[in-house]
Length: 86
Image (tube, rainbow, N blue to C red; front, top):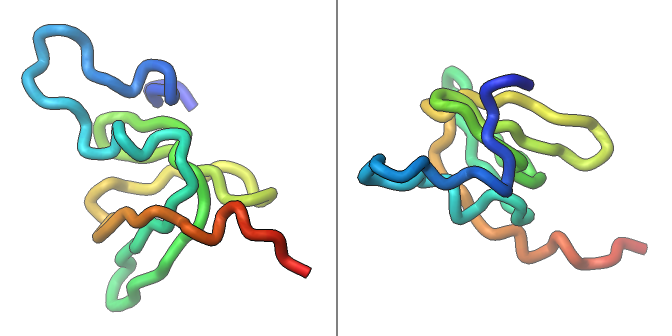
């Protein structure tokens, strides 16, 4: 997982003019709309870090995934993240 910035250091170093578009979402429960070929798939989880070209995304108990940023169409807040399921 080298190269990924964690929630603690997701901001860009001093001197860079623009923060990451994903910095706001690091550590929060989100739904990523991800495009793959002709499919658009929603993925529910938490952005835990990023590199220049990928996001490190934690999906439930399934582990962490590296997702290429160019495949991400949208990031949405997951309002159901705190809901209990019976």
